[in-house]
Length: 119
Image (cartoon, rainbow, N blue to C red; front, top):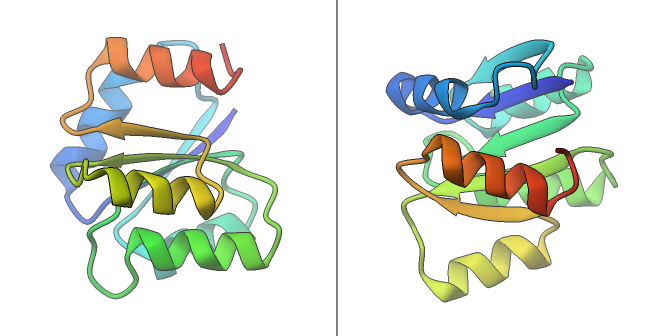
């Protein structure tokens, strides 16, 4: 499974990697903002995208909008500290498969992957 982890915080990206089941990802790519994420996606680096919402350059909402316009074939799981119901509804309307609050735990990761049918 090709995984793309998108967050402007390298520590948050590391936490996502640690939360993944040991045998889940065959390749992990990291991006610090939405522009980098779209570049990585277009290069074939992602089947599953873990996406933060609050980032410089291009935020997670704009990244989701771009992926939706392209009819991108990727499963997007949003991981964010912004847990307001309106933010959760907006990301789902933009095509996110799941929403997980930060900081992510292995248990929350496993549940999200189960909920979207990946494990």
